[in-house]
Structures are given as C-alpha cells and as structure tokens.
Length: 284
Image (cartoon, rainbow, N blue to C red; front, side):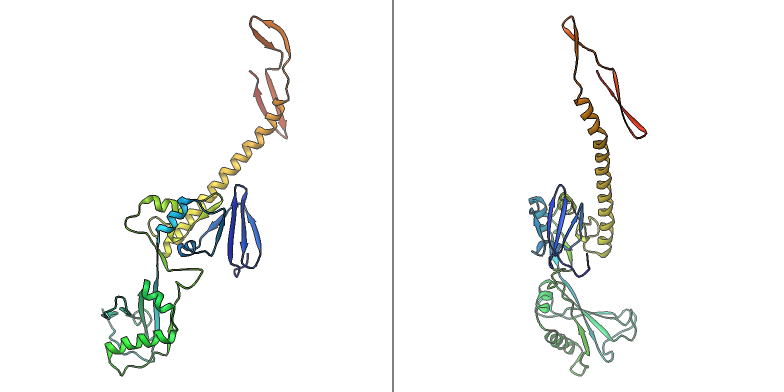
C-alpha cells in the first residue's frame, strides 16, 4: 500500500479483513493493526463494516482528545531576557489561555532567535481556523504589551494544525480522572481480526510518544500470539479430519449375542499413515 493512500473502510469478518482506500484500491489480509489516533477513531474518516461493537464505541467516546499547539515565531534578533534560569515567561490576560505560556529557544538552539507560545484546546481550535497573518498580529500584540512597542516584527511563523488535520484530529488522548481500567482494556482490545494500537492504548504512558512506541510493541506481540494459536488449531484440524473421516466410514459387524451385550468383530487398533508418521486410534 502506498504512503499516499487513505484508508476509508474496513470490512471485517472471521475470514479476515478487506481494506478499501479513498482512491478505490482494495486490499485483503488476515489481520490488520490499526494505529490511527483517538481523534480519527472518533471521526468518520474510517467506516467499519459491520460497525464496531458497543463496548468498543463507548471506550472510544469516553476518551478525551487534547489539542496542544506550539506556535513558533522567528525574529531578526533577541529582545527578551535570556541566560541561566531564564527560559519561560507568562502573559496574564482576561481571556483564559490567550497566548499565556512563552518560551525562548536560546538554551536549546543558541542564536536561533525563536520564541514559542503554547495554546491549548479551545484557543488552539480558534487559532487553527484563522489565517497565520491574523495569529501573527495577535502574538505581536501580546509581545509588545510585555516588551514595549519598539520590538521588531517576526520574520516567520509556524502554526501547527493538529485539530484540523483529518489524519490527527487532535494532539493526544486524555482519559478522564473518573475512568477505570476497563475503559483502557476495551480501548486496546481487538475486534475480530482488527488489532488496535497507539498512545491511547497505553495503560501507563498514554499521551506520550513513548506510549505509542511501547503500545506498538505490545500489540505486535499480541498479534503474533494470535497467529501462533491459529496455526496450532489448523494443525490439530489437519490431523483429526482424515482420522474422523476414516473411522466414520467403518461399519460394525454383528457376530453372535453374548448375554445382553453385542460383540463387534473389529480390529482393536487402527493406524493411519501419511508420509513418515502414523496416528493410532483405539477402538473400544
């Protein structure tokens, strides 16, 4: 599957899964690992046929999606305080979360002349919906309120759009405080041949990059165990089916009555052979 293809539908059954993409391609597999974000699961990007069971839907809906936006502004020179123990500063505004948390990048990248301001949730969504020029105007208004009117204009700005990106629909998962362990267990539990993974399925590190990494390892191990289990069952079926077919074709021959019991004149042990191995079946 090419990296540019967008999955829009998953048809699943006991026999496997069919994946349909936006450009009309169809792929079939025995299993699928689904690593999309919790925001995508809550959206209508991917259709499940048949629909996911109620317990899975409830777990998905109970998990909150956080939007966390770091806006980067580059300047021709530094005008803010910097040095040891000087990295963050806070702006107080009557509107909650309005360009509140600022950080300069001089400690990490000396000479970069970059400031970072962090927005969250509703402020993030508001800023994502407007042009970058408007966001730059608002940010410069805040900086001039803090450092005076003579500071230089920013020469560049980067505004991530985690919420409006249909492949993300948010930054990371956030389970409510009142949620219990069962919600997380239901979140990561497979539905038939569909295995779910991602930071939102991590019990200890949801919301973090390493949570997604560790969840991926855990999910892949679970899938491998399922494949081993399936192959073991297939091998047992392979051995039993010819044996049952053979013994089922036998007919019992009545000889003479022995008291009230029937005596059957059949061999006491049969052998089936295929290749270099044999299978014995005791006839009682």
